[in-house]
Length: 506
Ligand SMILES: NC(=O)c1ccc[n+]([C@@H]2O[C@H](COP(=O)([O-])OP(=O)(O)OC[C@H]3O[C@@H](n4cnc5c(N)ncnc54)[C@H](OP(=O)(O)O)[C@@H]3O)[C@@H](O)[C@H]2O)c1
Image (cartoon, rainbow, N blue to C red; front, side, top):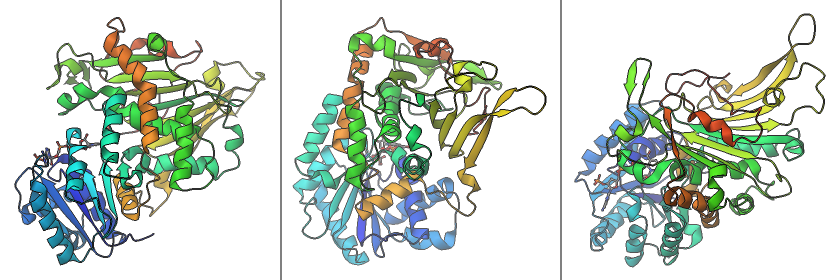
């Protein structure tokens, strides 16, 4: 694998949760694989006062707790690349000290001027920090490239996303801006492209002539945990659909790119978003449904309802569950319904895209409900990453009884192949200057534009209900109502409650 040029990664928000849980373990894993730049340093910034050694100890704990494996022999030299300084990033003057320290580290570590700035702070600083960096000339590429990674969420709605984008573009070019969507860094999400475009057998069927409908589910077993305050302002639509799930739709539905490069792939994703049939605000009730988890008992444990969680308004209407039905108005997908479903406190943790192929034109064997006789291709994003094809087989014995069986591939069967985490892949790509798996401005705006009427209707129309569902169930009882065909239901990847994170298959 390519080794990026010598460089430094500057993390704003280095004392926060994301840095110790995801970023540093990912960077340590890249170091162990010997694919970080030969000369490299990580400069952490945050409001907590920490010495370099305090920071290294804290990150060491993060690596121990959140990596697959821990090997002190490898971790020790990695920790020497870490530095830390206090900053209040809202104060323009603070950037003087920061720049001085940055220059010292560059000199000490011999890393040169190439720099990635990672914004792992509250979203309110996503415009402030790049602006202040530019005021101190830290966007200047005379001494090496400069890139800025912006964490999610990119905006709160279409208007705020446009404003943030505009502010960034005052000082940074689009090719310097990396909008992270960690779903795109997942191996199995990228495998959607490989499955589709490296095999001759799927793509001829991947269209309105053979596909009955497409279903994408991202189920979470956990609730909002300690993030009630954050989630109140976000909700499932902003937290999951606007970014992760629509990106997954983009890859599942796009045309073959002309080349495997950043612009070709992102051009095709954007074309999908531009073809999404707009949902009218007064028709949202027929295209989208929202829900909220209620208190229940799961395996003897009492679970709080969303409105009882810390930081949540007892009268909150924030959705913890969303389903949306929509169409992609182009030649490939005309008339094929797409269904997206996501929620918290569902029976299991699973993300999957399911292509339901049309049933046979004539039932030679006993007739079943449409869904049962559809072949399904299940692309499992997480956990137990893999691909599963469901098809009918004869049950041994007299007569012609047909049973659905699975042709199943699990990534875990690839012995000795470690699956890189999404952050490993994305951080490595940012150092290489490859933005293919980062969201481009037009895609982000198109996604917000598509969801804007849903957000508006939910905000402005008190008659649109928020349906309750007991924690540990697959959402509101009437979740099937949005599905066009009355003989069909959602696919339930797990009929009964599973343990956290344990994937189960019907
Ligand atoms: N955690 C995740 O799994 C996850 C996943 C996806 C996206 N994100 C996004 O990533 C961002 C960071 O998430 P997080 O979970 O790490 O949040 P967090 O634990 O609250 O950390 C926020 C960080 O920002 C720093 N900060 C806040 N105000 C600052 C200021 N004025 N100047 C300098 N530093 C300041 C904090 O410093 P102090 O604590 O020292 O005050 C802390 O280091 C968020 O925007 C979140 O939406 C997080």
